[in-house]
Length: 393
Image (tube, rainbow, N blue to C red; front, side, top):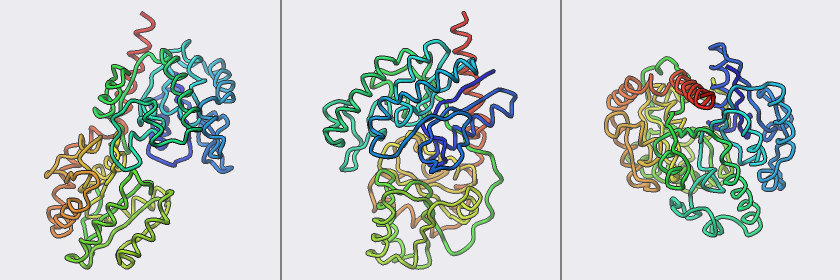
């Protein structure tokens, strides 16, 4: 089968980008001719890992480019004529590729695989500035989060995407949470396919000092500031405890200042971006991995990776992570934005290594097959066959 996968970005800046390339490579390993079409955004002059690329930008032009990207239209038209895919698998397209690509997909079986809330929210997060989940439909309510200039352009983007949405023959959601949100906004029905992560051996046995870790972008919606504030109370009763923050993002400087202001300089290590191998080595030492997002995570790749590693998870109890963490058995769920509840969960695992080991092992045993990249691609291949067979008949 010839499969063309579209995603805004190929640079490994997040879980969606890593998974996109992982899906392509797993399809190739199975004998399919799978190729990726993305933009050049975030590559900073480096060679793209994708097979085809169009113009992308992170400059001030981005708002206009994500609404109307003529280069994406021209190049995709050429790729479709040359490659002639059996199916087009669209991941993210509204931060770089733009809705201009959609009319081109009407001539080929196409699925939309929702990785985040881009179809129902111009920021993609469904999160208000004050840190609460937005329940309003996109429109005038978005002026709470956007400047008037950006709002006007992005409302045009939304009208175009809605007008050309008939380009998609099937919708796929990466969690039940995402499926419900799409349905609430009249998009779907969608089938659920959980994201997949590479299968690996379990981490080594835990050793002192007790450590918790966060891995991901350092921005407000991820709730890392809540984690730092919670940890500041934990070290009063667990003075040897360490917090490892892996990743980078716009809030890094703010978080560095927060760490200093709450007296955690000797307890927190911020690594910045590391290679995949270094990241896994660092996370192997964690007694628990924390996903403190205040937004409703569509899935939570970092949580799935922790489960595959055999690490106990502490996550906020909404969104995708709440679907794959069994509270009290494979991890602990806490209310979003609640530093006190998060501190209690941290204490319960940092003070009981056997419990942390037990939870991590249980999560890996229960979810290893469900959350593997192989299982994800199995389901996706089924959707490809479904949509191509439906159109052929």
